[in-house]
Image 1 (cartoon, rainbow, N blue to C red):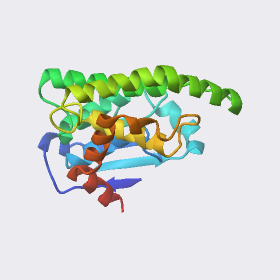
Image 2: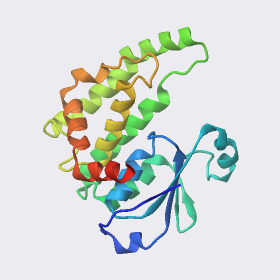
Image 3: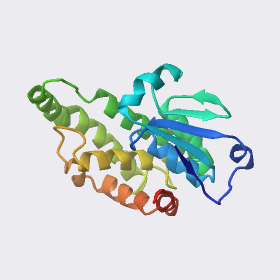
Image 4: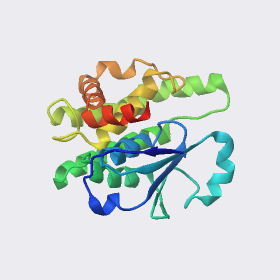
Length: 215
């Protein structure tokens, strides 16, 4: 467990509550939440565990999945809901309803893209399925995301950095590092808006501060 601290205090009510985030020892669906909570100045407990610990932890979660965010001991789930909560606290969620809709649209699309990616126990069959997925469904989804960014001026999904930008960055990093078997590591490089968005969010002062706190 790591206690994440930040001297900034944006929300007295939330900062006075006890927060504990439970997730595997990796970025995945939790990194957007971690960054946003840190940006909010919330001293949260970052509880990370390995795969071997999961069978014992799973029955303690509300729906058998993670991330789970405990607030004053009460467990809350669903990664997008948790990201939205943390994003509002950390300034990564728009106040304008239409911009909030677009951010929600983008982050739900990214999560759905991860969910529909083909899986198979046979490596050769998985490779074949993933190649077809990249050429079809994945291209359709990513074209849509790129369109949202271009409508916003070419960088980001809203007028200010958002949880959708953070989630997109995480997805692009997974592809670039080869975490998705069968998907070309350079897949996103032809999308100018996506590339510009991930470059911009990586340089955000709040993001930089979070990773500095982890060193």
